[in-house]
Each structure stands twice: as C-alpha cells, then as structure tokens.
Image (cartoon, rainbow, N blue to C red; front, side, top):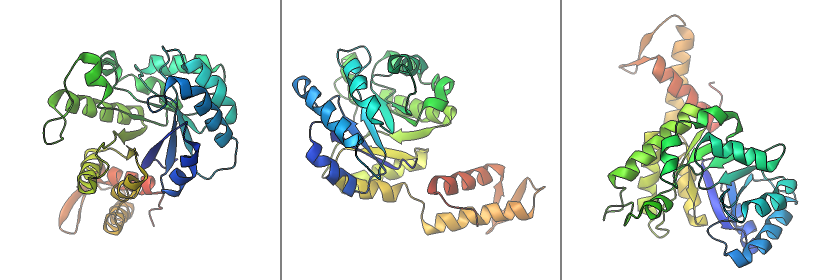
Length: 281
C-alpha cells in the first residue's frame, strides 16, 4: 500500500468523501475522533460504513476513538464489518495498545496505523512496535495532543519549528517505525495557506527518513505527493547504483560518477525504487 499522502476527512461530512478521493491522496483517513462531536458520532459511523460498503479505488483508514474512552467499542462495531483498509489508533501506547485493539476486534484486524505520541506514557513505548510489526500499516506521531497532555504551552517555536522535547518525540517515532519495518508517516502541517512552508516541511521529512505524511486539506496533497516521490534523477542514480553492484557482485565499495558508493548506498537505492514501485531496470 503506497502511503505518501493520507488525507483526513471528518466522518460526519460524507459529501466531502468524493472530493477527498479526487484530491489524489494515496489513502483517506475517515475520522471518528477529534473532528466529530460526540452527538454526531452515530451519524458519522453510519456514513463511513455506507461509504466503505461501496466500490472504491482508494484505501480508506478509519480513525476510531481512543480505546479507553466511551466510543471505541461502537466505532469498531459499526465499521469493521464494512471492510476498512486500515484503522488509525489514537492515543496508542505501544504494542500493548495494538494487542488490545485486536482483542476488541475479536477476529481479523485490518492494518493498524497508531498515532504513537499523544500521551506522556506513549513516548516510552515507541520502541515496542516491532513486536506487532506485521499488524501495522505504519507509525505516525502528532504534535498537538502531547503538549496538552503535559500542560505545555505549545510544541512549536515562534518560527513554527518544533521545540526540543517534540523534536525528540518526532525522532523516536521515526526510528520506531523503521525498527518495526513499517512506513514512517510525518505529522500534519497545520497552516493550510502556507504552501511554501509545507513544501519545506515535506522536504525535511523525506530528508530525515519519513516516507509519507498526513494532510488536513485537499490542497496539501499534490505538494505532499510530489515531495515524497523520487525525481527522475534520483531514480536514474538508484538504478545506476544497483547496476554497478550487479556487475561487481563481490565488491564492497565502488566508484560511481567520481564518488565512492558502498553497501549502504545499495540498500538506499533499492529502498527508493521499492517505495516508488519501480523495477531496478
């Protein structure tokens, strides 16, 4: 499942579902949590279940409510039978939360995308997701709930960058995802009007090792997709690296275009083509 861009859509706004599909997002996140008021959750469940029951060409995750709250059981009862392509799990606290979700589902569970940083306790379990890696679609984080949970004023500096505690959490989520062998999904960029800032944020995420990102508005999707897609030059270089090692199978290090390449470069090249769904030649 390609997950460059995952677009949130409020579950109680079904008229937006087709528009979200038209955005070009790789997947939708049909939301039952923060964007839906308690009184609208029953209608949102019904709308999502109806949508999931219709033919569709795009993977659809459902963000359920936290497992320790009053709504998760009803969320699962409403949507699991309709066949979501994945579940987003908020307030996740490591592998134990994924196991608990599986128990609540009472049977087969679609791939899970935990939001792995929304409580203070969650930070200490970011290394545990490898225990349930086969059940995950990826791992993501958020910079809004955690400061609220600990009484912090904000997670950001005046220029919009993250403060040191939240940079740490971002990094731990990134490494936790890769340690579990799953997609590392960057947090949302909240300033919808700032396309230049979004492009820079996407570039930073890809540079650091994130493989995709969540979006909160359809206008963000093209920028995210472009930023997490390799350029023609990158694809050509990756293929050249792979071809060089294929022609020299016993070599540990080689020279390509005047620069030294070794086995880590080969691994990077293979991963880049795999994420893009491309063959080596």
